[in-house]
Length: 147
View 1 (cartoon, rainbow, N blue to C red):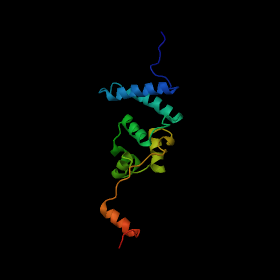
View 2: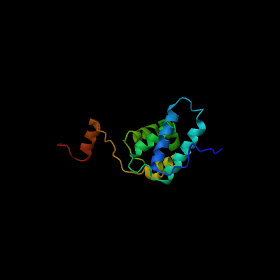
View 3: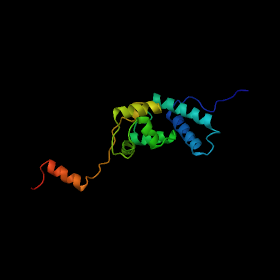
View 4: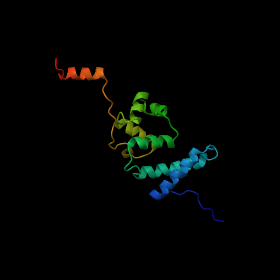
C-alpha cells in the first residue's frame, strides 16, 4: 500500500496560498492540541517558502507584521519583549505612527524566518496634528509669530 503525503514542500504561490488558508482554519479552530503537529508542519513549510521567495512583494510591512503576529499567536506585548522596546514604540509601529528601524527589521525577520525585505518597504505614516502648546512652541522657535 502506497501512502501519499498530506503536505509537500511548497513549489508555487497557489500551493502557498492554499497552505496558508489551511493553517488559518486550523488556528481558528478550538482543537489546537489535536492539530499541533499539522500546525507545526504547515508553519515550517510556509516559513521555508517565505524565506526563499519574496511572498510579501507588494505588502505593507505593518500588514505583514500583523499577519505574522496572528499566525504565531503573538500580541503586542510579545513584540515588546522580543524587540526590547517600549509598549508605546510597538503601538506606534502597529498604528503607523513610527517606522521600523534597521534593528527592528532584523529582529522581526529573524524571529519570523522571512526575508528582511518583507519589513523594509516604504509605507505611509500617520501624521498626528500638533497640539496648540506644541504649535505655539514651534511658531516661536521659528520666529513665525507676529510679535
